[in-house]
Amino acid sequence: MNSERLIHSVKTAIAVAIGFSLTRIVSFAYAQWIIITILVVMCAQIYVGGALQKGYLRFLGTLCGCCIALVVIEIFHSSVLSVFLALVIASFIFSYIATSSKEALSYLGTMGCVTLALILLGQKESSLNYATARFLEISIGIVIATLVSQFIFPIHAKKKLRKNQTETLKKLRDFYNQTLVMGLAEVQTMEHHDLDEEIVKLLLKQRQLAKDSGREPLGTAFNADHFTQSLFCERQILRAINFMHLAQDKLRCATLSDKMNVLLKTFHEEVLTALDAMAKSTPEKTKSFKLPSLESIQHLRADNKEMMVLQPIVYFDALIFNAEIIVDNIALLARLYIE
Image 1 (cartoon, one colour):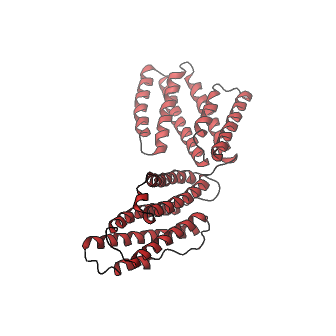
Image 2: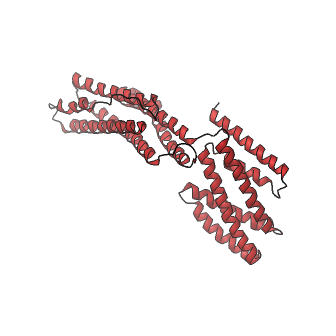
Image 3: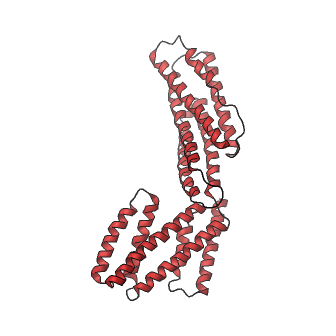
């Protein structure tokens, strides 16, 4: 059983219990909106930053919808024409906002449009009271959800992000081993392709965790530039592994000396050792380890003077170039983890 999901479920239940208890103590006109808001804000937002963002967007969308509805009610007295025009124009505007590529604007636009429609069409005889009550009760639900998320068994995206980065390095090590160290037969297995997809998913997950980390107000400050650089390094390593694999496969057709095979094997072992050392250490304090040496792999081209055919030389250059990319990014990652 996933411990984070279990803790989050307990927190959601606690928030609902608090909201329900409050509705028994205070007579709210539409008490269901407190519980609904708590569930909407918390259910799918396991991390503190995600819950805070969802609560903020729900508040802002509700506020926009209520303000427009109040204008229609107070100034135009909820005439059929004014309600019709308000719904049509707001639907156009909020729909345009909701289809934005930005996730935040998408939810805000949807919430604003739904709120306006509920107020203008839901309670004809007391629209003003309904609008005020909806805004108040949704705000209370947001406050309960965000406070519980922040202070009761908080689950921080920053910690999950660090674990994700460690897992990514382990997967990169395994992928490097399968792609460049093991034979071609093993490389073509479904397991190898699945591992490539897992790494891509981990990198995408890091982006979302970074967004939630930046929204968490308490604890150590999240360094967005630091994360961007580390994510770039991981992506560069993944790309370079794939390109090295293509070059190395082409070179299998060429006859390599025993010395060249030993040099290549030594380099691969050094890369695996470096990735493994970084994965086992913490981002806050990366243990010192020996960086892979480019000197050995650079000798491949120098020791291959007898090869006059153009294609193998091009593939050697590609192999060496991508090896340099891997070493440079491992070195940069090590510096970032120590900072």
